[in-house]
Amino acid sequence: MSIYEQYCKEIVDENGRLNKITLDYPDNFNFGYDVVDQIADETPEKRALVWCNVEGEEHVFSFADIKRYSNQMANVFRSAGIGRGDRVLLILKRHYEYWFAAVALHKLGAVMIPATHMLTVRDFVYRIKSSGVKAIVCTTQKKVPEKITAALKAAGMTARLWCVQKDIAGFENLTKAMQGASEEFERVQTLATDPMMLYFTSGTTGEPKGVIHDHSYPLAHIVTAKYWQQAEEGGLHFTVAETGWAKASWGKIYGQWLVGSAVMVYDFDNFEPKQLTAVINRYGVTSFCAPPTVYRYLVRKGIPDMPSLRHASTAGEMLAPEVFRRFTERTGLPLCEGYGQTETTLLMANFRGYDAVEGSMGTPSPFYNIELRGKNGKPVGVGEVGEVVIIPEKEGRQSGVFTAYLDNEEQYRYVWRDGVYHTGDAAYMDENGRYWFHGRFDDIIKTGGFRVGPYEVENVLMEHPAVVECSVIGVPDPLRGQAIKAVVVPGAGYDSSRELEAEIKNFCNRKLAEYKWIRHVEFVKEMPKTISGKIQKTVLRSQKQVGYANNCRRYGRR
Image 1 (cartoon, rainbow, N blue to C red):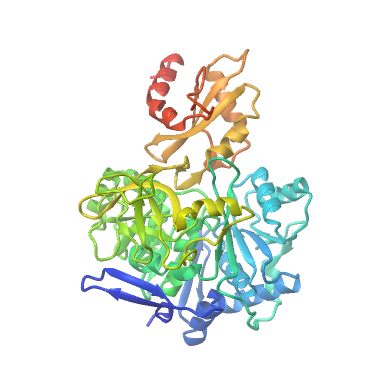
Image 2: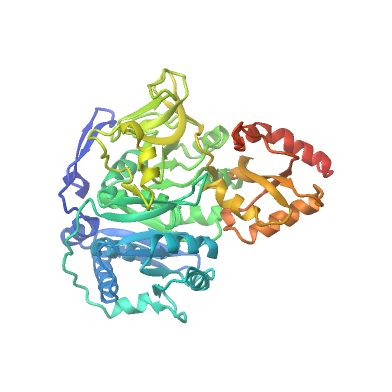
């Protein structure tokens, strides 16, 4: 019996399909104590985390290890004044200390803020100021300590600073500090409704939004792990995501440990298909999840035999049918697509017990009551496009859906208008009850598995003196799914040229995190606009192929 069964009731049919699932948990549920520590007490040697890196290091951590090290880290945090409700920024890439720190912060009742090391100083300034962090724990790699120091100075703030594994001036070495701390930690009283995690998600009309989840959030990922990723008791699940992204919460800790699966972690910087598949085979990975970008590279480079692998899933962007077919032909495993948001857990997927259909989002999760609604707020018919909305069983409350936007109650009320949660995503249902993604009702760009809000890039573009007006859109890309394209109205005295395109890209990309880099620039005389003066991105997207072809001819490209 896996521990998750203590906290939910499932109704499953003879084909293994989940028909209904409801959660049942105490008011003080806390993943750190009620899952990690309980497993450690009952089966201390049970495997929790298998970690390796490109240098050949490897560690296998049991649940007893996770309990012990998280207790030690919690004691270090508490001695520094970190407590219930305090916010702590974690920038730990795929270092194993992330799992100790996450569980430690949960036990303390502190709010962890995962962030990617790819962020720029500008990005960190925004997150530090808007969240009011009390402490920061970071990697020593990729000049992150330097960026954090510069960001704190620019923000005019101070915070308790830790790094891991190495000594860095101005930062305490948390890996060393925890070694001298007590392995015992008395339970702190927290509530399931307390804030547990804060993610910053890209926005289209403003700065990134802070998304807050409470302590019941891990339980909502039972469906994610068991019925979509098909992680299993005694298995080893491998989700590729870095810990700064919400996908790490989907695939690298909560649901997997709840259903009894260990988590595989490969600490790398540059994706190499052969290394990834070598890890799968060396450690006997049983279930695997990655964005379509990874599968595209695997298909291009050649897929080796992976005899231990029993299930493969994908999410984050559109998957080309050709990639689906070639991966399935080579491995015998269908690619099971899934869909959800940073604000939610898994909403739709090609679930256990169903045949996976290429390109389809699958069927709605039985954990949620989901409808497609038109602009009039009423359900749409088969084949008609509507917005994906969640209808809570209890008014104003739905486990697995975020509890607030950071300091933005107005935006939170807006997405919860009419008593339902509006995802902003458009889809349609076919005659077989399967759902198909149609597009965003806003303008989020999904590139290489990352989500980028146009505003973040446009803000930097406008700093270039040649840019009078701009708009950023996503355009089809064979490897990334979408590439970022800037449509620019140049100022007087600037000619639309290949040289100016390169100058603008270099100017902006030096200031942007790599996953936000501009790949294409198109110059136009004026932007298409609504009667109220808003730029019509939908028009730009419909013109993108013509515009790019014109640019190619203009610059002499073929």
